[in-house]
Image (cartoon, rainbow, N blue to C red; front, side):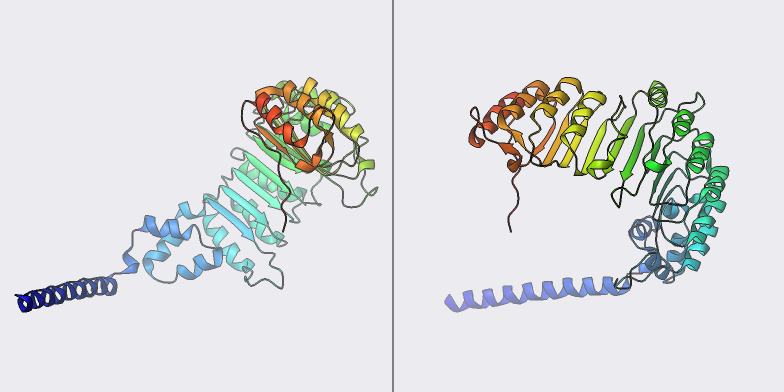
Length: 387
């Protein structure tokens, strides 16, 4: 009986081994006979969308099927130009001629284009040949007013989003041309030096759709070197009457002495971000002049408590729902009062623990309970990470 049991176990083991070998042989045969060139084009298309331009071009040479996918219009709806590879980069820059060839063939299909390049010739090809651009992002590119006129001439009926950053050759007149002709423009992002009263009035005309998002970057590289003009209150008023629900987002990277032209009268800003130190006086003016404010982020302020400024913002900015404070100081009592006044509408409350200064009423241990009570949810201050 014992020996028979051993033989039975041995036979069972051999059968299992034979079955596994058969499965492996089947898998290997399937792998060897699988024709990658006959994969469904929809699958290849999804893979190609994740590939950089140069890799797409190389993959298109594998077989006829892959080459057909390479020239499918759906692959070229969204296109990003990245030609500024530093000398230390392990990535190879795409040759401008390859981009020109692709654009000449697929310019009619382009809808969403992001361009960051010093090769203005490639961008010119896009503007000249494209007929249906709806989204265009231009960053650190020598685009100029004549180029924008070409863009407008070919895409005025379709362009809905335009974002421009670090484009020193574009003038306010160039942007005004875009606003005058592209009546379907819904989102616009640009540097403050391109913003003008004429531009706001053009965006407020009856033939222009209501703008949904306007982002303004107010940037100074060297203190005292940049002159900032003032936008008239009447221009802002006309703009808001035409687009009452617009989000006006302003990023400030200024030095303290450069804020004088700003927040002198009411402006319709909804989102304010201060990337450098901003004075108590400026934040006090924000509370007085930005009644539509929804979000406020202050990266640094100094060593003077912002108690009065926060209370003023809570009193006058009835739509405020998000605030972030970095290198600032606020007494615990003033902060609790601020949260009490804003109530549960504060969906985002990001405050570094170092910002809060204990006083006779609240300690750091007590404040999170009090704030949580007024918010209606558990809240803790953010902790500075230690390494």
